[in-house]
Image (cartoon, rainbow, N blue to C red; front, side):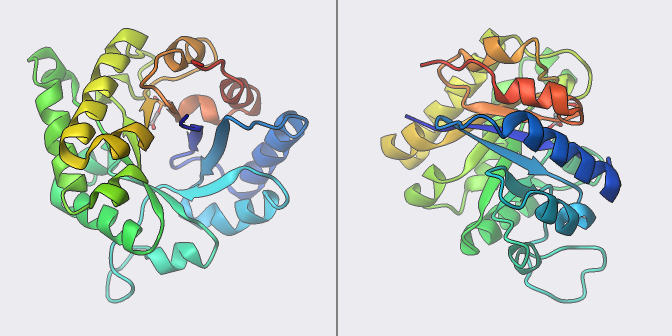
Length: 255
Ligand code: PGA
């Protein structure tokens, strides 16, 4: 049984006081419940990590990062290393988000190096893949996702691959309010698990968690999580409100 993961990607939002208030409200809302079948993670902007780490003290909510570079240290202006994240007990990092790919030009090769660095540092990468609207319309979605997977995961052993988290995020669904239907998401996520099976074996395919992301909200999360290959959600917009994110965390999931 795979544990669900409900992950908040706060992107470039919130200043420290706002982040603290959001965490306090989440803890107040969710703190009364214990979830044994799911984990909850928040990924703030890097500069907020110390503040959010402090605000999360005593809570089971996991602290994650939105990005990192693959080198340990050096002349890499503006970048953050795995060691820097580990110094704040950050063991989960989103890698290859479509905004990194499309706005900042990250290549499959760069993303592969970041995934490798995360694994080498005993971190869990949350590896994002997903096709653009144009790729979707021209029937190339699967081909694109498989190429992105090979670029990101090409260096991994079977054991390493089983321990990562994948996130299928169709670019046309991110921040647009146009969620993939549960059937569309399940079809791609089943294909991703199938590709894991072929490339890394049955054990890895059975344990790897595959999230869906792209306009997940309190109204659509239950139907998405009712699908067998959807192991959780990566949530942007709806993670910025304590009420909506807490509702998403409580989503009913497939048994
Ligand atoms: P969204 O973002 O929920 O606002 O669509 C999701 C993401 O980019 O991870």
